[in-house]
Image (cartoon, rainbow, N blue to C red):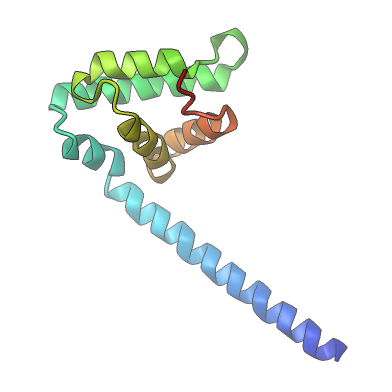
Length: 125
């Protein structure tokens, strides 16, 4: 019985490793596709608005990495986002999808996604 249990555990561990490898490959392939750019394009962003949103995300990621008094708040992030991409002003679904999309994009945005999740973003008041 112990051998059967151990062999099942070994088989499950092998399967988990295989799935982890496939997930990492999938994430790398999605990053090549630039999911953030695709999302912004789908919502009608101009190239200037896309660059402005990406600059915002870069700024917010840098501030999140510094932490402390530099750490961004959701309210300021949302306000800046709506200022840079007015077509989505007040669109809570877009903001949620944008934050989720960060986990599929480049590494700095994946870290920003982790920060946003740890802070409970989005937090609408």
